[in-house]
Length: 195
Image (cartoon, rainbow, N blue to C red; front, top):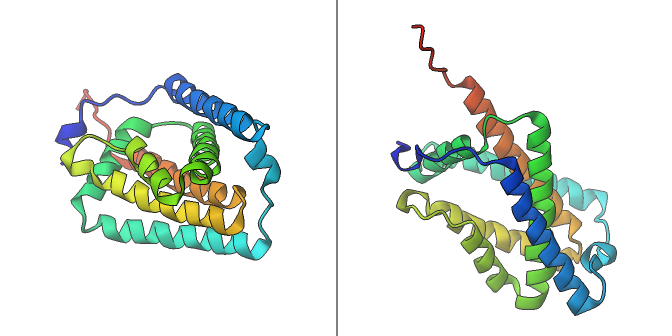
């Protein structure tokens, strides 16, 4: 089932953090050069009210349930889960929180806080999807899924003018994915050479 991704090695944390550091630096420079403040989007975003935050959290739970149901019938989702298991597990709970936090923070800053404001919702979603493109016919769904997620996150940002709401949604989705693939990795039977 996962033959096309079996040779992939787990991501090294230093590479992950280097990529996000470069993206955060790009976002800060872009905000500084276009708005005069490297943290403009963070300083000008209001914190959403409790009801909005609660609705977002419930939306993430509905999203996660939908993914779990669809994974029973769609092979590309199961292949993607296999790829994520290889790339992102086993890692510690601290690493799960760190990756979920940093990826959500930096990606929302750059893609919603910068690109949506400068290029609009659809073009920023296309760029987000291309950055999540996995060059495999069986894993094309990830890029399409990323496009629609970017549109929803962009709408949340545009409607609330707050970067914090899409940040929370993005963080929770990343957190669920990382917990799930690590749980699956720890549940899988291990190869024992003594048997």
